[in-house]
Image (tube, rainbow, N blue to C red; front, side, top):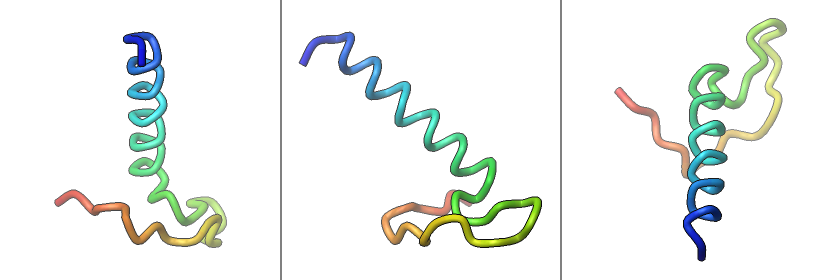
Length: 46
């Protein structure tokens, strides 16, 4: 892997992590409907 690939992967991972925390990842805040199944591997940070 090149450093460019590592940077891209890291950026994608962080954007997903940030979006997931911002919206809870599973519920649409405007409707309260579930938008995707809960991810059993996702850890809730205190």
